[in-house]
Length: 306
Image 1 (cartoon, rainbow, N blue to C red):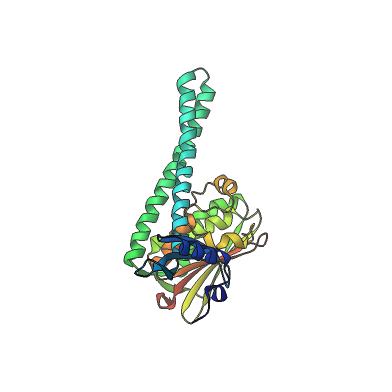
Image 2: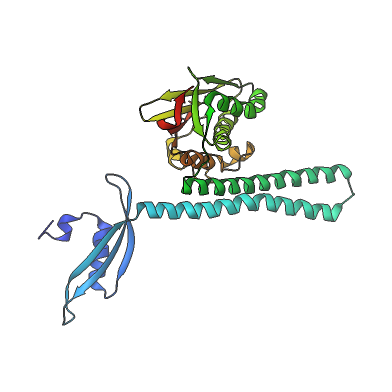
């Protein structure tokens, strides 16, 4: 690039226009531009015209910073604020409306009064569930940040069976079979309460988004550096565009369908932070119409033969 013009080195039209604009001005200018190759990145440009002692233009200083991750985090924060406001406002609006209806027409029709009170109770429970999940997520994040989960040795099959028992009734309603396919039992060093919650959240989703008379399978893989627990369903699947954001708070692939199933939009975020608190990660593979595989990856040192 040395001794070549900026137009020879950089082909981005936005960048060149910005530099020319800065050369004509007298103040520091700043903006973000997007580049698409080899992958989408957001570059922050700060440009200042340079002048000699006679205040004649002698060039321009351009500083570029890759702010892709920062901007992504800012967007996640904005989405979170917008989403949590919406999630809380929706039931509050319903509660307020039915309370006003009861105040105006109390005792006019006992059946209607009971119906309205039932709707209010439903929305209060939903608000409570959202608050409980937010508090749980805050507690788990603190554990994650401090890396201080209380680990104890437990049998893997026992943990899996406990998680299955929690969602068994919902599975039976839809005649869904949950099968544990592990060749041998292992001792696993985890915080059993948190880890069971992660398993329950994944199984609950698998059951909720699977059609009737299907099967959900729990299996394991032993690798050199990690131990993997796979939860496989034969449900509706998820398109690729949603996969990178699936574990964000309140992110929903289909908002109407998610609320219909009674979720708070925090279940997968809770799973992510629980697994991270154990030094692992959670991943997903999915195709629309072909089901999903949610995988918990744990460090191999947490696993021992039973």
